[in-house]
Image (cartoon, rainbow, N blue to C red; front, side):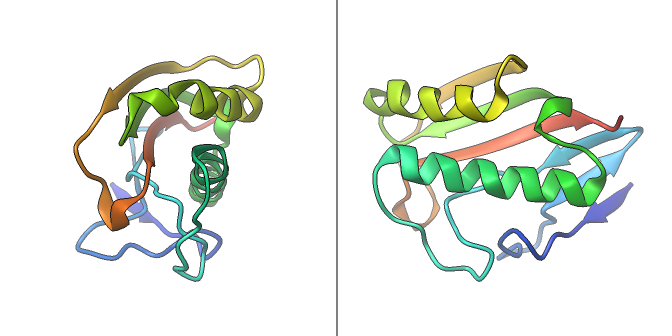
Length: 124
């Protein structure tokens, strides 16, 4: 196992890694809408989702993968009423690639954000 770090995504703010690579798989930590400098990106769920997916893409790139290599995501939404808006941005980011996905509503997320997404990808 080896940890992954990307300066193009927010640094881990606790005792965890942005991602871990093991056996040709990349397991990302959940990403929230923070800019690489740690600044919270506010706005509607579409704006937040775009930042989250940009963070995921940066972490995956540091590991040698891309969104096109993702096999599974888990999306945590503060409000399932935001599903359609999140899904539209998600679909744009992944295009015709459709990884397996779970989406759940949660009571709270770090920094009171509206969305967090984690991913599992294969290394090409």
